[in-house]
Length: 193
Image (cartoon, rainbow, N blue to C red; front, side):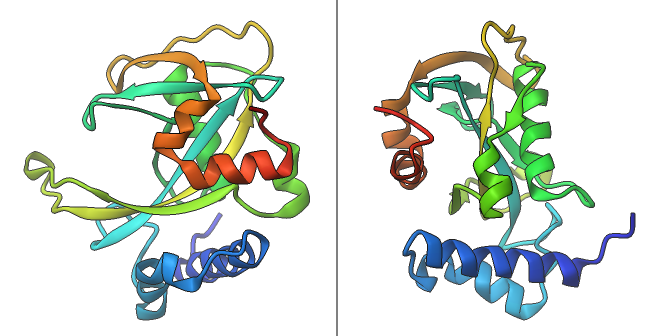
């Protein structure tokens, strides 16, 4: 499969526009990403600064009452699994790959709402600290986020090279991590109090 950066930028811009309409989000919320797209930046590449695309997965249990979080090694925080986009994957596949890699869980599935709507549950740009050891200045992750469903009693086998651990937590933990995503999930009935 041939990967074309211009096509990827058009796809992300289309998602931004559709997401903004669906969730009543102002264009200013994603101003930097929109500017990078307009400038023709290679937003698919982790070596593109001031920012690039990442994907992440909100892994929910079947009832939508608990979320699986990982303790991120480099950021030293509990977060949803996620990481850098890898061309030529589609964005949903990228999020699912990250979820499987970081949790070791099998049988994870993208929530059917995404296929029906064609949208992510959230798009969030957030600042990432500099990593001089990797030659990375402070930069932005433009994180395109998806809801992933876990079946009952799937074993969690986190990759301890990437994370300190993984565990099921109450959904309210997302209030501090990804409040917009939590609001969107509740509004759509994908997650419950």
